[in-house]
Amino acid sequence: MGNKNSYKEQIAANPRFTKFMKKVLFAVLDIPEGEVRPYAWVAQKSGYPGAARAVGQVLKKNPYAPHVPCHRVVRSDGSIGGYSGGLEKKRALLKKEGLENEADRYTLPS
DNA sequence: CTTCCGGCCCGCG
DNA sequence: ACGCGGGCCGGAA
Image 1 (tube, rainbow, N blue to C red):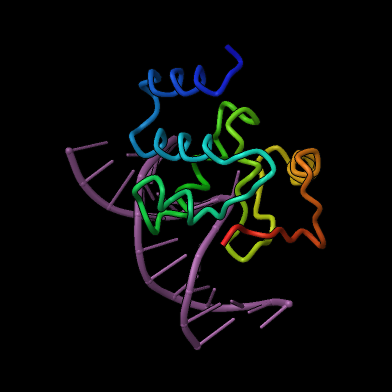
Image 2 (cartoon, chains in turn purple, yellow, brown; image 1 turned 90 degrees about the vertical axis):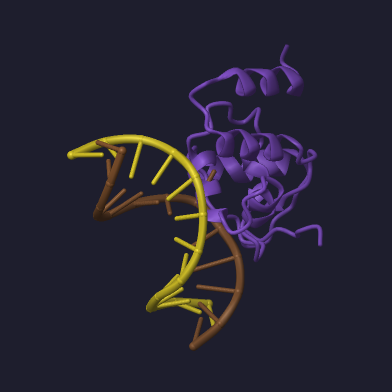
């Protein structure tokens, strides 16, 4: 029940979410623990390349944080980006996953 | 490094 | 139903 799949079902069933929002949330759910991805990556994977900023809007309202790991989403230049729960929280969560950060910079996959 | 502007979906008036 | 402004951005200047 606290697993990833159950959140997926809740999200899919919630009529309040648009197709776009669902795609975004699903994409974020697929980010492995201990790794980060850029907003642009989420946008792309959601099928809306170029909608990175709109992705931010969705994440900021993310009702399932931190179960939907929006804290693993950072800016494409590696800088930390934002977090509606407060950046301190975001840093702490990432640190718990083993990500050290130097001056709020994170290393992206590719 | 900072600033500026384009581009995208959503929420509210 | 329509329009306008905004934001956890991105990339160029």
